[in-house]
Image (tube, rainbow, N blue to C red; front, side, top):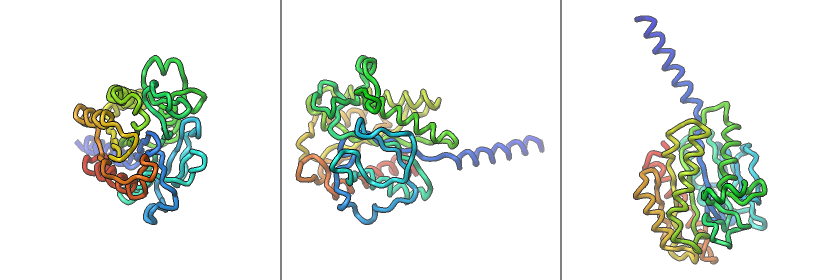
Length: 287
């Protein structure tokens, strides 16, 4: 009996120690509003200093991620607008306030990119498509190919390898994309569903953790005044949320835009970030 109690005590200590070593990881992907298009000069003072957030940032063929992390500082890879930020900067600050400990962000975003390969205006003809035929005939966008999905997954692999001495705990994927699929909006439901399934299965495969088959996905919609908003794309997001209890939609219909009638302005980005974080708390994705 005494040995059994001692064993249970040791087991509980090991369990506690293992839990303490778990480091939160957030995945972020999408196009320009996820990448960030608000001038850095308009970043509210509350979000201009970060203590715990470490990130790995990749952007198609604009910037290849090495798998290494660095302290988060808002920027984008697109030439001439490097000093910009997006709604995710708000999410990271809120997570810092919540956790008060290091966490990691794996972000791959590229403005103007579509899922559907029928959308010929997709930046540099790069695509998020999970179509098997497409993936079989290309490679990662960060290594000369046309697949953003493969670039993102390769970045995830490299980053998790960097974190191998710790137990990574992937909390969710934050996704904002769809404007560039305005040429093929009727395909968006099947296309995004396939992308999400591909990412989830990839995570299960590389980690061996079956729970990632139900990885939470938090997806924002678009401002009503956006010139590239398509109702079919919005409807697809809500349909996915109805069918998949681990897929969540954050409304952005009433948020304000910049003069280009496409990208959130400082107020819109800040509000969307607060809503994304609020949903993550409400659904206990983070706590």
